[in-house]
Image (cartoon, rainbow, N blue to C red; front, side, top):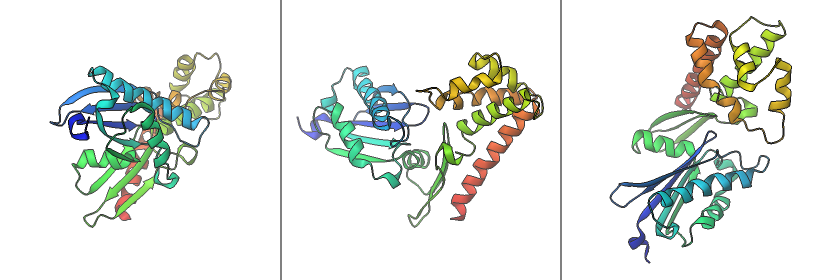
Length: 256
């Protein structure tokens, strides 16, 4: 079957919260969708296996939902948080694609997810996008095609304003309240209940356990925002600081 006859395009968005795949027909109609686990840093613990599982599971679910076969896919495009340009990992992700495409796709593209996010948000026009999910990054392109990036150095370097940033700061604030090192906050009983703890020190056996995934911390960001909206000053300060950091990220891109 020729590329023209196959025709379907598979797009994959891999983030630190989840991986999503969408199968699109030549007329632009969405034929099928699939989801998978989060894509993580490729060079982290079990990085290759985690990314492969996330991408392959989402990618195989999309054609299955459309009653189509992987061999019907003519092209694949991936925008991945685990594909920063510094890693030059295109060949690695191409191998993952070959694992589920029984016929080699005629077109293949992979780049960092901030590139595909800006393209989708601006319809290919110049602009700036700030992504704040499990992690955070700012990216922009000007009229001359020059690019700029701010942040996006991963959780150890902050991921300022992200779900990780908000969740981690909330747990830290709960620990300070428990130890009487900081102000009392509704975040303390929330964290204890959410993680099933009797005391905050028991968080150690959870967050340092083998196999613990960072999305369990970033996932509480919505609750932190809710608690802030209920009038908790500590939670409100965390959310406000996160928002300011995201603003700084956008300004950093603009200044570059």
